[in-house]
Length: 120
Image (cartoon, rainbow, N blue to C red; front, top):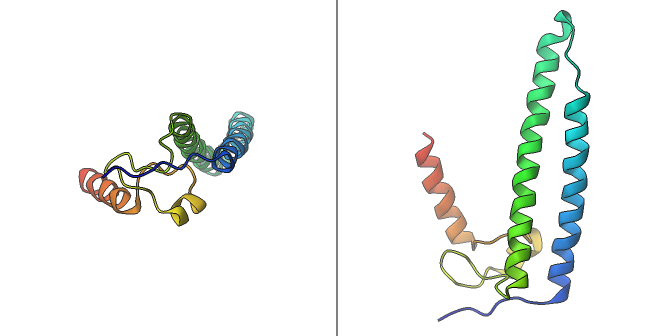
């Protein structure tokens, strides 16, 4: 049995707002990354650490932005709130906390478990 999608304007507006905030955060991080000049010999370790930390944040924010964009596409297609793995409805509480979620909690855990094994 196929679950009904959530297709209300408030969810789409929330995703659009989250996308805008995430784009702004990504822009700030990229500016910060560019501003981290090559450190002097005395500051090399600290500067390298800061660049690596900022680069990791840039990657995480890019992933989040991609997730938000995927959720927006699903919303526009009328499939928002439906798990992309099992086809069941994603729990409303999960969507409230993580509006860009495209997997229900069970499928997300299965996905993470599979990926954890892969990278051991």
